[in-house]
Image (cartoon, rainbow, N blue to C red; front, side, top):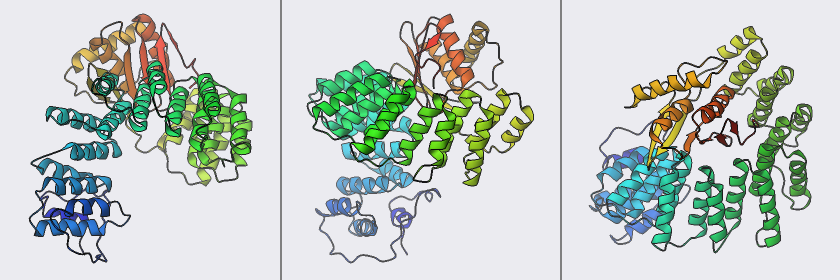
Length: 490
């Protein structure tokens, strides 16, 4: 039985792929006519798109027998195949062994890096492509913009936008939507609106991207007005994703009645059946507004079984309201589902702790396994710096640590400080050292910002007279002069 790893080993004499890479087998080889040298690359590309890619593997073996494994078109087609089937290690080895690379091979690796959650690698590949003198096409630009969105690399995103305008790159649906998404996820809503307004052709994806961008930036009322414009335009029918963005905007803006109306309209006017995600948004909306009983009743009576995400949204609302009784009811439902997500125990421990139930807080903590590692990114110039909680390996760590001490002394917080400091605090300290005033310090974080860090950011923005933009897992926070645009509603 031949496998992806076995077929690739002749070309890639490297260690076997990691265990998490799926092993695609050739149990039943497909009988195909042997292709000519010129048709091999297109055939690999064609067959690699099928759900069962065994024929593409046979073509790889055929390329070895014919001595075509070094052909740039064959290599690029094979690289795209391995990258698209989540065999990142094999794709990377093949990429590094390629004597000649082109825009397709670079784009395939950029997309593969994004798929496995390595936006920093994607940005490095984009820079390498530029240094190699290869002109990026629309697909490469979209990949690079996606990486900018994930890391908050606003300056590089602006450079790409300038490149698009300077070189006459068509503002297609994909490039335009990627720019809108990038600007929104970097907290630059005005720039996103400018791009959206200048797009010659808008699709429902474009409208949805702009709606979602307004929602996560806490501009629910503006999202509602944009939806009105979408309906008036009449060329694109709203989808389930459209209403997800609207409900998200209502949740972040505390627009309870508007959210209820949209939830009803999606069913009655547009015939869209709500999914678990829509119910999760409604649970979040009602819970944030303090309507915990109504939210619990709605989730309990859902026509489809609620998942742990829906109950988790309600649990987070209980934390915001310090409602330990409702939180315990929610945890009972999660226990019935045999949910393995330990983050719920973290939240429950925090709720117990804030209510003074320290023994129960400790018990809940014992049920927590390994938590996701907090990571934050800050951009200086066009370079993105990553900070992981507990990691002191940054070359400027001595200066960062000194700045952290200065920040903590000047913030004069009543509560103590965590040890080690959360990643967003370290990123802010580095930003204060490297980002010149009055430019805002822009931070991206992979987890939700905690209440203590949120209060700390407000104090730092006041004491240091700096504008701080933080994008966490849920939304954007703009800290300025001691307050946040979320109005402590996140």
